Image (cartoon, rainbow, N blue to C red; front, side, top):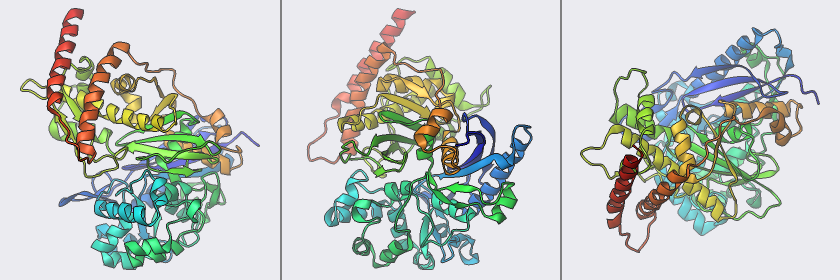
Length: 567
């Protein structure tokens, strides 16, 4: 196999799409370009009357592909070593579950004049939680009809996922549902669009999207049965036949780049295009995921990814967002967990609770600098990280945030640190869930802007989880992982493992747990667990929280005393 050449990864995020060109021999980034979605609020279509609504304009996706890939190719051509003829393949990732209602030809309904301004005809972004009642109904009926459907997706179906969104659309916008021939995930739509394979019946469908969000599994011959879907609504059943019978892994070719698209982006027609995947999954590949390695994609939310060999007995793990063969690394089980808000919580606090101008121009930097001077427990504060619900391990979008322990002397930087700590406690809950079910976490690799830019966050995560925190060398791991699949379908590498050896690495800096901090965070974590279980787990047993405020004061006083002793 020829290890000379370039691959392209196109990463569809929540607010923008990025194209990245890399050298397949070593993963070196040659050029990149980003296209910010112009529609709505930072690319998100909102409803002022319903905070659970989050939609996107599908036209932004197509414009974003053309603009970002063309700009990246143009930049790369400015380098004498680059030759567009040496591009071997292209891979795509996206947010998910982000399904689009499409017509019989596979084009989004939003492209039609009658639906262009209809929120329900747009793409239903991953963080749209309007279908929480449908998700609960799906969970209840699946448990009665065939519990296996739930066992492979953590025991609870989510409002963030495929079927709940479609069912909700049927109930609130029947005219949209009736006009839609099928529903297509964003990570499947883009490869279909650029390879002229938009027919929903035959469009290549990603095992990543199907397995983690649509209850697909080979144990029951693909998607849930027509009988089960008809139990939810008779009109859902036909959608099963408008979905490819077999979902496929991302190391397979979805098709060839069409001539019309190739002309617009400056690439050769016929370029191999990989089957799509979700961004966190390709991010895990771009970070070099392997057995016993947890990859955390830390951004507006987090996605936590692990893999396990197919010949290793893997139990069903409650609270996970799916256990799917081949969804991350072909030939291994892919496991997904995560938190519904992390960076979004920090942004909420800065934008709405503690805004203001700073000398640096960045309120996050100012608050981080001030929070760094605090010691664990010094603020006397404790928070729950559920401002956007809980994805793992409770799988409950109807939960909300909490801050306890504030006094008349509480400062913004203290709250900011408490929010960081809350997300770290939530991260530890996820690690403990894996390890409880015999999936040990030997190392943690972090990716995303927060892990790159905020040392305080990484140190708190190391202290709370009592594990070293590594950082991926690439600050565009999702796009890098997509490019690696492009290299694989371009016949540069045989598989993910071979590509990872050459194209991935971590930074030299490692955040090690600080023993003194670990001890304090252990106390705080036990209090977090008390709050977590009291508010998050339905139980007939009464939960006594009388001790929480009192214990926080003791921890605060001990931290202050230690601080004075060091002065």
